Amino acid sequence: MADSHTGQCLCGAVTFRAQGLRDIWFCHCRQCRKVTGNFLAACRTEKDRVDSDGELQWSPHSGTSELGRCAACGSPMLWRQPNSSTVSVIAGSLDDTHGLAPRGHIFTAEKGEYYTISDGLPQWAAHPKGGC
Ligand SMILES: [Zn+2]
Ligand SMILES: [Zn+2]
Image 1 (cartoon, rainbow, N blue to C red):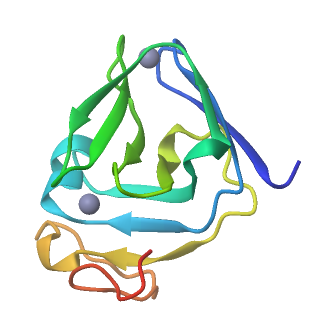
Image 2 (image 1 turned 90 degrees about the vertical axis):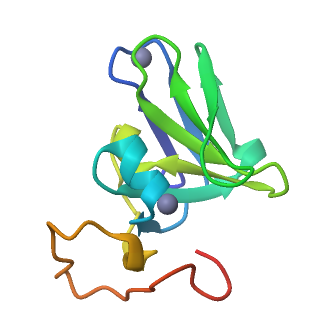
């Protein structure tokens, strides 16, 4: 199914299925850089369109948002905010990204000075108006 994606953590204890994923965004904010070690690539869908198996551990991310990791190996896979109907799936945890196109870079004002963004995609210093 073109609309359906599967993913898992590094150790395989957590697997998930996501329907209706939208485009991939790169987030260069301080929090995403800390938890990923570089920057985050993620794509959104509705919370009720992601099903997971295995033990997820939710830790505080930015503001009220939380990052869902495998309780065994720590791989980050999901990001959510309590007041939003959507959840973000971390692109690196997907088995494949068919049909998902990269759209742009956000929070570039906080990006690392050791790399350059040169893929020609739009960039926003903070969060783009209208959401990502
Ligand atoms: Zn794992
Ligand atoms: Zn971020």
